[in-house]
Image (cartoon, rainbow, N blue to C red; front, side, top):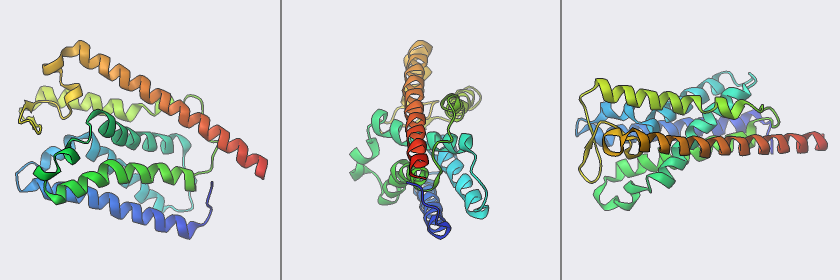
Length: 221
C-alpha cells in the first residue's frame, strides 16, 4: 500500500506528533514530583521517541521533500527496538504493576512503548514508496541503538546517579539487561550480541518485505 494523498498523510503525521509529545509529557509529569524528571533522558525509550518526534516534525514542515530510505529505516528500526525490547525483555512490568503506578505514568508508558512504535511502522506501510531499501541498510540501522548503548555505559562511569527498579534495587544502568555490575561484562555482551542478531534479522526481514512490496508495486504500474 502506498497512499499519495498529502492531506491524509499530513493529518496522520500531525496526530502522531500530538500522541508522541503527549507520551513524553505524561512521562515527565508523572515523575517530576519525585525529582526524577532529568533521569528520563537517560532512557532509550524517551530518546528514541524524541528522535521520532523531530524526524516527523521535519516531514510535516518539508512535506514535499522525498524521504531518505536509509534515514527512514534508521528511525523506524530505532523505535521498533523500543517497542519490541520493552514487550519481550522487560515483560510489560509497569502494566503488571498497574495498581502501584499512577494513571498518568501508565498512559504515557503505553504511548511511548506501543502507540508511537506502531504508528511509525504504519507510516512506512502507508506513505513510504516501497523498494528503496538497500542490502546494507539493516547494518546501518543498528547505529542508533549502539550509540545509545555506548552512551549508557559512559554515563554509568561518569555519573553518581542511580536508577531504581520496581523491586527497589539501585543500578547505574537504566535497563537490567545491560547491568554490568549485576551480570558482568561477559553476560551483558552476550545479551547485546543476541539483541544485535535478533534485530539484524528483523532488519533484513524488513528489507525483504520492502523489496517484495516494491516489485509488486512495479507490476501493478
